[in-house]
Length: 307
Image (cartoon, rainbow, N blue to C red):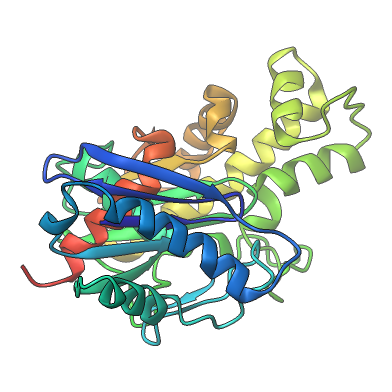
């Protein structure tokens, strides 16, 4: 059983051992309301799943959530769900399952860690014993596979590459640090920098609009993506040097721009991944798209809970 909690939607599915999904359902994430109203949407998703004839076959439950998360306490404080601050989502989901006569072992994972589990199981990191997987979207997050094991860290935040500093004198990040990858390479940061440099957006002032302008040859838009690609390359190389990953898988909305993002990453990577054991480091697009959240929640439950 998998639940994927994000700022736009709360989704659920029953995920089979081969990664196929049945009984998939979703609810919009409530906005401008309180914590219990958001939990009510999660409860509705669980109710939908409990109506499936396969419900009794579920053996574990994985919850993937936007972060920050604290898996040591089972709590979440998603930036994009203002009503939840240190909300005990793992305990609340377990209680809801118990109320329906189903007591399943339950695990909580941040969305970057869940995406990493999914891509290692069925996606672009399949077959790699050591991998970094990233989500580059409104924010920048990620997770690690080390020795074929998911490595979430004590609080579930290991691999959070978005808050590695790559610019010593860079602007202050929302996290309080300076020059973080997220403050340069997120979709929001790309659009903000392009606008500050005089880019004229027309009707689309988002990173997608910057990508379209870059594809059309706009020099400011191309510079914005080159800057983002350089920041990502520096962080990817630093991570690979630290823990010897051999592949970086990138998904998320900004990654949908394709070579507009990947070409500068690969170009700059050569200047940062210089040691012999990281020179063959590959950067590739994620393979699972919008299914990664649910597949990843199930994969994380399989990887982090005993059989």
